[in-house]
Length: 307
Length: 307
Image 1 (cartoon, each protein chain N blue to C red):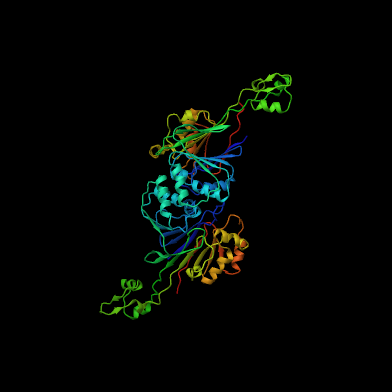
Image 2 (spheres, rainbow over the protein chains, first blue to last red):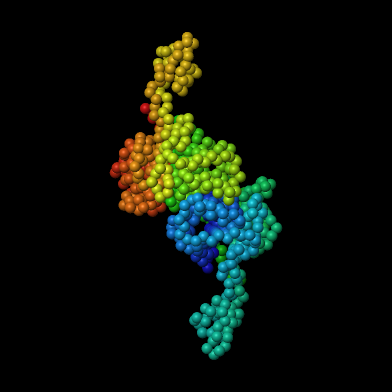
């Protein structure tokens, strides 16, 4: 079951020839979850071969233009391509008025419904059968959310030898047990999933900080993440400026990753001043080895956990 | 005196990996005039080495998203880079509400004034010392303007031999005569510009149709243009669809260019279906030889006329 992260835009607040504005696409079982939607996202999606027709949710961290101005063009292109599935948009207060006022002033001719969820509190903002999306308030210049995509635990490994020993015939009953349902055999005995399944296996977790200074609770929010995608707009030497602008530095991001026991850290929202990002990488790696610097169209596959 | 056209976006209503959404930048004597402002224009400007600080005017043809959704990001980046010069924005009714509602819902922190001109009638919409911008209603699905940048005539060639024969000493007085001002010599005689200048020389003219079907008056509006930039979204075989969608075909554009006695025709707003545009070029060239198909970052220099 694939879970892939595609970095569509990795720039700071101003794009560069090589970096488009913030947008991170997560592909999961035929669904697309887009975290932030900076200007140019539709073109980046086309280049990356993403779909305008699939089940899709957009999660906006905050209402600064570089994180949200790609949304109207994305909606327009979906309409031009006759999308029919609804589009869900989650974000802080203001996202509804933004979408509505652009729809009133720019002509779209929508072919699909848009469901807008303004996130007031924190916690679970989206609860699907196999995953949730969690939100927590970050620490930026304006109300800004960090998001976590958290898969629910999967049933444990199916032990065929146990099933056979219990006399469960190979076929549909095996499938029911694998999906966590008890079954009744022809002789009347009940076999429960726990009789044939190993311990349930944990789901995967991806955390995206959006724009933020380091804040209390972030490491806990990101605990055991398979992938932590963290703001690292400016390098350690510009920590004071980062603090003023509501951003983080590589070593701040790395400390969070370490404390959270994350598996992998990707630095993003890279300021246009860094033509070469080796300095950022070096600063983070001193603290957290498994660090990468995002670049546009970088793809990361998150493997299934076996535990 | 340079006059250069840089095609920043040449796509139809949906971008492609190689074509950004409609935007045409005209550079003239340290000023930038941008015709249409599709999503992604700020990134295209960065790639093309255009400035966010120079004197600048934006002319929007119509309120469809693909022509206007780059404006908020352009404004935000100008503000982030501390622009101080005003930005003038011209467009049809609706442009003011669009800019204002985005400013209300997305946080910009403007560092410069924006002057918005909603164009109600046609004719001269902008009158500068050395040029005017003219508008006429085109024929699209929604109110849409075609624009012409028309330079005012320049003073004629300065004949040094005539100036010398009349006893005008080389120096500041020559400059005054060249700029069209009469001068008084030390012996009291008056020398007029026409005594030393040849006939005034015509200015240059660039016409951009925006999205349009062919319409009466377009050839006249584009008369003698040095450059006609014309909608050619779909090829001749799809003329019926072009008519439905409010667009033109290459041969329709070429007929206008021929009738207008334009010097050069550039086809733009190219549908994503054309990976190869040779078909479009061929259809137009049958009627108007000096035709080109726009591509992103194509630059065309318009030479000064000597007549």
